[in-house]
Length: 476
Image (cartoon, rainbow, N blue to C red; front, top):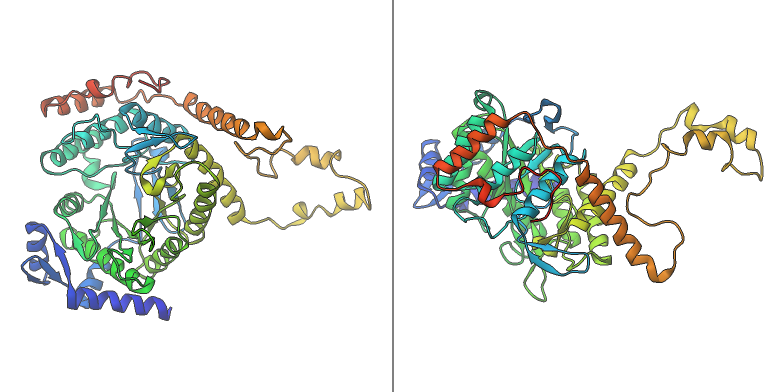
């Protein structure tokens, strides 16, 4: 607790004595009107102001889905998952990369929709360059609404496109949009100690509508943060607190998620590393600080710097996700699929990471100990030196006691075929999920309205997602 208090107090000193730069006049005016000290574009917060505002944010909330069966609690002991975010490239099993496409986007949305691991869909699992830059977010949101009934994660937008986003959301959810959290957005700081105009514009818009935002300070230790874990965590914490404070100035009670998303620099090259053990330490301290402020938190998931689906990717991904789950993270972004330091996403790793999550959940669940699981009568009946494999107790419990991998290979195979066997299992698992996808059919009128909103703003949805009416078609 003393370490947490020290980081917290250092963060308050940063906010009070150094401040945070807001590249947004409206945000500066909001801060000034709320009693902060504003000099040019730098906002300084008194410790009392910061903490009074942070305390207004709820400790948990429900993200309401189009289908109430998928509405999910964010906070407490609940954990929700999202796939990778923002990858511009697709990486195949052997490490070859290609630009992401609109068809890839739909494919990831279908995977998240069909798999029961996910209660939230959307976001930017990939960034298809073929989508027009000024309407890409609106098109991706439309695709998510079309193909999913789950909670919605909305990519950031700006200017006219942000207005289009809210026009679509208000139409889609109706009057409920004014009353309940429906659309989740991600706001990142611009380290060190800044928020850019784009992030602040989104922060203000979502807070005004009472919609939840993930606020993430993201100092990179050694480049955009001081070369000290404690110091960089304090800096990122200050950035996160400033963003949370702004949401509460706009609309007290706005749901937020706390995110201290620090990573580290490779001191040999200066590049950011997300597969380092220090990144996992940031995840641990993220959760500790979130609990200190009584807020739900987000973190990364199966993070890796690996350039292919290989030993390094498995080692780093399992380590990173283990830290995320052991820390009690409430929302895992980048839970599956990510490679190359967020530079690429992989369908095969998406599937492999699902198995990794299941393995970690089995470990976290631990064992049940009672009269039934101790099975003394079975042990006595078998006695000394015999076997359990053919005992009726084993037949009765063989399908539900031990975890079975979806893709991992256990049986004996010829050594030269091991890699092909693993790839084959990954491909089969991928196609099983896609084949189980069912297109939502209960929103045709609203979908027509979504298309009309886009068309009225100069973009035709069907020109970019022509496969939208073919639920099992996954390639262009």
